Image (cartoon, rainbow, N blue to C red):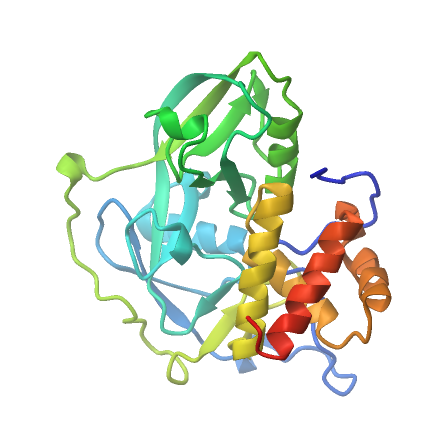
Length: 312
């Protein structure tokens, strides 16, 4: 299916949620001194002492806090997982963090260069990004071209394609670039893999969900924002969780990306719409940058409707 990047309106809310702050009876956001103080525990995924971080509102600020805690450059952080040190894409930190979550930071390790022969249109890669300029591999389809290459792994950052740097690109841009590569030719991938612990063993165990000074019982979530302060919200309802999961699957099927924050935005747009035309118009207004194909929009509308009535 086409990736559809023709119309350009405004940057879409992906890993960093860019929706406006809610209006509180016309009042501005509360001053920093009155906002809840949330402290999270963190470790480097390859092994480190436990650090404590707080006071971040988006992914870039989070990486800066991790850098301060461990004396590393924020640019060395590739991505974070929640409650596991493993490269587990199901535990990938997106635009929100549970109030009891333990953050593991995966940093840059070995660089590698791989020549790939594009023998068919689909490479079998699902791409995501960290919201701070790095796109990386989230899934490799079994039996695909890339699956047969031992050097390419889930979690690898895609640094360049045929010498063109991808630093600063979003995941959908990288997915389109891979899709547009000519069939029947070789291309060169430069990758960076997450740093692994020496000897495969990690030092300094951590107890997941041991954040200090938290609020509530862990059912809340800290929503990261690119503009304005992060906010504490309730977790999505059961209907929303099922709809988000299905829409994320559709994103992978149509576009070769997975992005739960983008899926959540689409569900939010569609959950109160009365018909597919109204949904399509609202989606184009909110995420027109993608110019989603009509059949994709219809399938998303159907998934939201199925989730509402319990068919998912």
